[in-house]
Length: 156
Image (tube, rainbow, N blue to C red):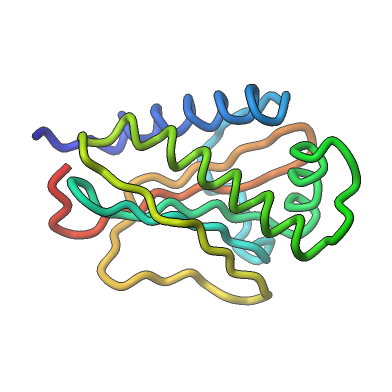
């Protein structure tokens, strides 16, 4: 099995994110390097883990205003319950992106159930993971960041 290089992974992530936004949210999304997105803006992180032939994690990070805007897009209306609806929407979004990205990874990569972390002044830290790709996305005035981390020794 050949390893997936960072440039190919970034291109696959951009294509996958655009596809999910267009088909599931009816919105356009533009990609750019993540250097312009300040870490302090993050207050919600949705994650899915990959196991099997390729091991790593996909993180979708945004602030609460972006999380609410994405939830409104997904539901087509104001969420009835901020906490539950927003967490469910971001979990679904990260699952859709992660699941579609899986087709660009080595065959046999499996996807976990999503998890959500909320709060302020936290930093996602995963043991033994190395950053492969970090991209910022904008849809209208909504900004988010997606990071793909790879476990050392991943066979991809």
